[in-house]
Every structure is written in C-alpha cells, then in structure tokens.
Image 1 (cartoon, chains in turn orange, brown):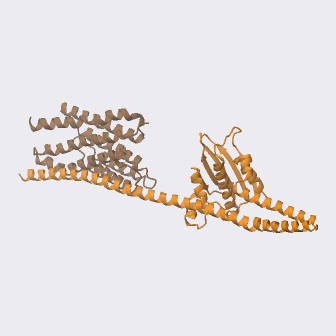
Image 2 (spheres, helix red, strand yellow):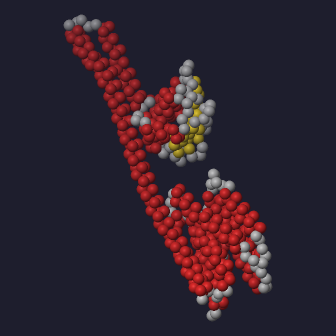
Image 3 (cartoon, chains in turn red, blue):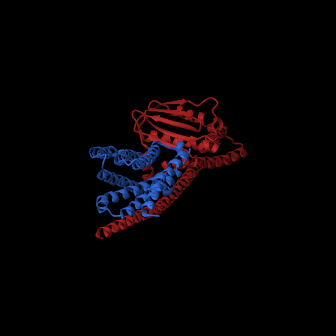
Amino acid sequence: MQNQTQLALFIAVGCLVMFLLVMVIIVFVVTYQRKMLEKENKIAIIQQEQQLLFFKATVEAEEKQKERIANNLHDSVNPMLTLLKLNLSKHRMAFEKNKFNSDAYKGDAKMIDQVIESIRATCRELIPSFLLEFGLILSLEDHIKKISGEVLSTEVKNELPPEFNLTLDKQEQLLVYRICLELINNLIKHSGLTKLTMLLKQDTSFFYVQLFYDGNGISNEEIEKLTETSKGLGLRSLKARVLILQGQLTYEKNKPLSSIKLTLPLKL
Amino acid sequence: MSLNQVFTLLSRISASSVLIPIITSLFFFKAFNSQLKALFIYLVVCLVTEISGEACIYLEQDNYAIYNTFTLIETILVFYIYYKEFNLTKYNYLFLIVPLAILIYGGMRFSLVRSNNLTSSIEAISLSICALLYFYKVFVDMTIPKLTSYYFFWINSAFLLYFLSPFFISLFENIIRNSHSPVLNYLWVIYLFITVLFNIVVTVGICKIKRN
C-alpha cells in the first residue's frame, strides 16, 4: 500500500515536471520574442538616429560648400569687380576729357580675365568640368596622375573591360569622384603614405575602386570609432555619400600595403 | 480492454510514431545538412531498435543488449547534432570528451541481461544540460528573429522533453521494479506519451526546414 502511494507520487511528480517543462518552454519563447521585439525597436531607433545624423552631415557639408563659394565670390571676385567698375568710370571720364590711358585699360582687361578665371575655379569646385566632359574613370585617373610628385608616387591599374559602361548618372559620378578625392586627401593628410595605387575593376554586379597605400593603415573598426568620436564632418559626409550610392567602404590594415575599397552596385 | 492490452496498444502507437518524422524527413531530405542527416539516422536507429525489441519479446529473448547498444549510438548521434548546432570555437572539445566518457563508461557496464540504467541516466542528464545550454545560448545571442520558425528550436525542445523523462524514470526505475506493482504500467504510459510527443515536436521542427 505504501509502495503504491509512493508510485502514485512519482507519477504525479513526473507529470508535474513535464507540464512545468512545457510551460517553461512556452514562457521562454514569449520572453525571447518580447526581448527580440525590444531589440528590433532599439535597432530601428539607432538607424533612424544615424540617418538623421547622415542627413545633418550632408546638409552641413552643403552649407559649408555654399559658405566657401560665398567667401570666394566675396573675397576675390567682388573686390575685383568693384575695382573694375571704378576704373571703368575713370576710363569714361578720361575718354570724355580725351585723356584715355590705353595701358591702364589693358591692365583692367587683364583683371577681367582674372575674374573669369576665379569664377571658373569656383565652378570647377562645384562640378569638375573634366568629369562632365570625360567621365568618372578618366577624371580619377587624371587626378591620381596630378597628385604624383617627388614625395608621393602614384599609379592607376585599370582592370575594367574595354566595353565597360558605368551605369551611374552625372550626379552619382560626382559623388563617387568626391568620395575618392576625400579618401585620397585623408590618406595624404593622415597616413604618411609615399606610394598610392588606384585599382579600378568590376565583376558581374559590382564596380570597385580600391586604393592601396603604404604608411599607417586603418581598419574598419578604427574608422567606425573615429567616425563616431570625430567632431569634423569629413568622415560623416563620406559615409553619407556612400550610403546614398548604396555602396560600401571597406578598410583593411595590412603590411606592407593597406587598402580602402569602395564597392558600388552596378545597375543592370 | 485490460490494462495490459491498453499498455501494449500504447507501446505500439509510441513505437510506430517514429515513422511520422522519418516519412516527413524524406520530403525534406534534399535540404538536409550533416546535422539533420544525423537526426535522420537517429530516427531510423530508433525505429530499428523498437522493431528489434519487439521481435526479441516475440521470440521470448532478452532485449537489454539492443537497448543498451541504442543508448550508446544515441549518445554519439545526439551529441553530434548539438556539436553542429553550438558550433563553438572555444569549448568544442567538450562535445568529444563527454560522449567519449559516456561511451567508455557504458561500454564497461554493458550487459546482455540487464538494463544499463546509470549510463542512460548520465546520458540523459548530459543531453538535458546540452538542451538547456542551447536555450541559454539562444537567449544570450538573440540572433534568431522568430524562434518558432527556426527548426532547431523544436528539435531542442523535443530532446529536452525526451531526455528529462527517461532521466526521471531511470532514477526511480529500480524502486519501481522492486515494487512489482501494476502501477508501473502507468509510469511507462507517461514515457510512451513523451515518446509520441517527441516525434511530433521533431516533425514540426523538420517541417520548419527551408527547402532549397
């Protein structure tokens, strides 16, 4: 009788344990899904914040560029035009008095050339004429050749097929051009490089611009930290531009050559 | 219907329930990786063990050797399934050492005439710990967007239920056997019910596998 009571107790305990186990699994699933929802919400908030930050960086970069143009026009073009206006009225008065000075007139004509050149330089800064005329690849190659000097030796390796057709519009090409220039500028400023190679290549779905350089390399993690902590706009606007193009920047720190790879999806 | 007849009927249902995940596996077999192939082999071994066990009873022979061998094969296969799922880099050797220890111990205590209860208890505890650790890992990693859509969640739940059950039974089996009570049958009913539940839950898991 005692044994039977004991057995009944075992069975009851067994059933209870199994029931509890099933309940524990159900509670686990519910808790997990709730925590996952919280995590997803957090990620969404962070992404929103990041997008806002990128947007802010883009707007700030644009404002800074406008400011630069305004300063350029105000400090160089405006004084020259004011001086020209003054000189023109002087020439008119001299002409009326039959005291016209042709040398002074020629000097002013030269000043007009300077004004034109200054405006051209501002326009070039906005959209490089070379890029409009010859496209991204040749512009990049031209830029790399231009920066080559005694301290820095540069090289371009173009592995793109002859029939390669970059499916980016002018605005997107300008973005890529600016990204590459910013990257090269950053390398010159911070890495202490003496050798720079630009590799252009493609596969079935991506177009790559890869910069190989000696000097101090930087990794993905380091650049991520730097972007978060940096007060400057450079790295953030770089990230924003890459994001707009739906591309990816990969930083690899290696010896003897480190690299930065810009990957862009090809529109089919 | 007598209690014995009910018990026999339930035993048959429990034994044949393993056919559900086996047949389901055949539909998904192309999408199976090595881990799921091990699960499939395990299910087939379960079926073969059940049939051989029944055949031994029919021939009035002891079937302890079959069940003791099954415990050892089960240890290898289920530990392999967990080894594949955990995919640890640091403590991977544990998935070799623990089953190896169980195999050595089980081999030493192997008997043709009695059940190797202690080995199956140790195996059940180890695999229950594996199942619980898996839940812990899932909770810490938080990488599965919808838990109930992931096949291994179901397989793990099935193993957790299945291994905790014989653990309790094997823990009290000697006392129960010595009691010579008909209530023993009720205890086995729980075990048979758990086996059916295990096969159903495993089938749900297999159905969650994405076909290529």
